Length: 104
Image (cartoon, rainbow, N blue to C red):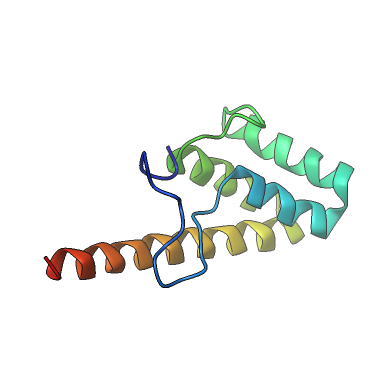
């Protein structure tokens, strides 16, 4: 799962939730328009051996985003943006967990 079971997916103290497939697709739609954005995402998922609409885990999202980056051009910029969001969320979540663990 992208968020731990029972987790709301938002980090305490931040207005940030873990990126999911819908976020990557929304970014592509903004850049390419609805139809072409969907095509780019579907192609990335196929390249990664996944089904568009079926990306459920961090590993799968990472694989699809890496395949998206390999398309070049604006797709690479969108992929980079999603990667940055994923890393930012992971680091902030680790920091929040460490802080919460130290408060016990």
